[in-house]
Image (cartoon, rainbow, N blue to C red; front, side, top):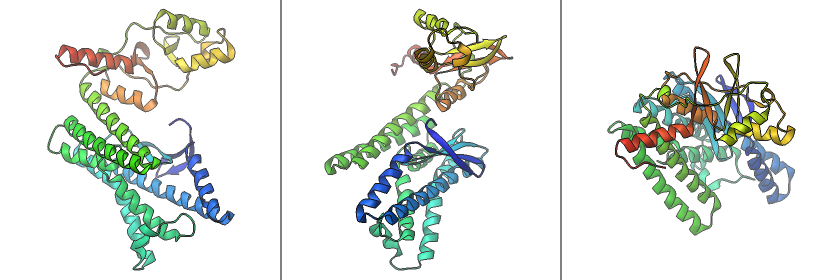
Length: 364
């Protein structure tokens, strides 16, 4: 994920923190200091945030390690102000497996809450929810509260929370996967709409933000599953672009500009001796043009780390790769030779044409 820094590894998985996390750190520091204007409160508040995100890492490891049990590796874990994201290579194929992976994260928080309660060994321990205070409250009680809250919040049956995946997996045990996803997404969006109305009535920006996040997350999940289902069984060679332009490393950027103006693709594979050595993206081209001008060489502006695909791979896999690498296009290579180019736009065009041929109204 862009704007993220690697802070370590856990169970062999890289852990990153997103730049927006600094906003949360700053907000907590100001909030803690504003209560009694004491630096000790700031230190306590930041220590609590460190513990909180340690808990979130454990939550995400619950997902990652349970997925590993089914042979699904995890690329990385990224910490965000609103929680964490464990990027699995793929979702489990079987609904029962997805159910276990989805429940593993909240289960970690339930176990941690039980352990904290046993440590506190107090009749008032379970009143921690009402006693939560960033400054001046019991550190362990606050952690107990956080674990209960994270487990409860994540079990709300709405994407992208774990509860949405739990609901989808339960429905998928009785019906087709795409339909189960659509129903789960609709329920999630209905809950998001109600939460948004409550947030507006109370003028609570946090509730409104969460409602928007859930609404868009549900829509994205439904669209993603629909596209993957439509591409099931279709090889990349059936959807890739065969008429494309490539560049040489020694070409000036003006050559790429000419191709763009002539109406060809926005990203260009860079080929040297028949082998793909880089990709010149539109953003890289524009940045280099602004800094160095049109005489700047392609080899100095191109991306040297890039994803590729084989024409015999399934288009569903390549579509997921496009989404994961956040790239606009992927060179298609066979026996070391560039044979095509795959873009998200071309996949979309293929799906619209296929829907039209099947007599279905296209979704644009």
